Image (cartoon, rainbow, N blue to C red; front, side, top):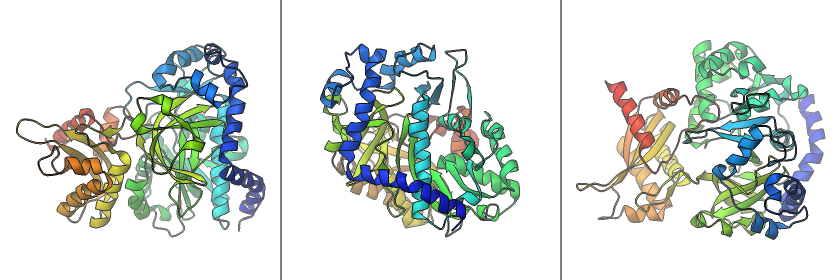
Length: 507
């Protein structure tokens, strides 16, 4: 065991005990978080307008504070960006995480006060390391550096003064504590380069000769980086460049479509993958057991959780606290945070796989589904079908999106899958059949709509050449950062753009 790992394990022991405590006492942990948040809410304009008192309990809090979307909070956030104090949070907020996500044409600006930065985001990062070293005590993680592919930040457009906004990753890099900066690469100047392609080229030049033991970020964009690294170095795989690489801390999108490609890029039995749920709005969960892909919900980061069964999405009064959730239900996540977000519906959906402790898998987005024909397909369904089809045919997927094909007077409707493969299926017919049959098995509504004489034809697969999705994102100015491929759409906006791009490529 490396001495640095031994020392960090000693320092982490107390923190691991605290994590174990909220595993065993989740309701008490969440009551404590709410109790700490209520005086802060009572002290700001948003709370005063709703007659919040510092000692209000959950029932009163839920009755007085409405469940909010970003559009509901935007007028208050804009006031904060104009440097009005005490609007949503009672400390000065100088940084805003700019989140464009997948489909939003207009960016969201999420307040990141220092308390949220230190007690939520950075605590989450420290816990990832503590849990990893606990699971792998022989790790040599700290004999090298962690590579972070981040975004960039700039003076906030609305404030026009000293306030700044940008990708959360850029904010985290900007504020990296001195004791952690020595273990991070590339240099801050390179990491914060705004032009994504220039950044990738600079990272390759800067890190190819370094001892990199881990990297972190979104799987899709990091794959672009790793492929560029191999092209730059002329090596066959990443292990030839960074032989001591042992950990990828990933999040932002499902890792499932990328898993096999990463295994080919990094053919090492000593390579580990650890999923995290770290959004612009906060750090929420991490994978604490390598044998379980579900993530442990972190209950002491200054976040109070509520959950709304997706079948009641139009009735937020049915939101419940953590202690009332059930396994197997698809929930929209609602958060109140030390970043000044109050009963904020973040847009993600999760399913609990365990209640002792509380573990979740991310199932999709509240707005990303297909229900044109009453089929109610969510991202989790699509991913299961895709995984099964890949296993059956030896395929691997780089990126994909799914959209409806509308019915007309001559034909029933269908789903169009536009898929870019890392490894194409050996048998296309088997791939398409397996995908459609699996989707019917995991989603009874889809199965009913696929019945003879009903509304849906078999899934249609469009095979996109490699690089299609990258070019599409580049044309839209959405390279890197918080930008993600929309997996499911209830209309054809993105599918039509991609098909137009494919038409250009074929011309």
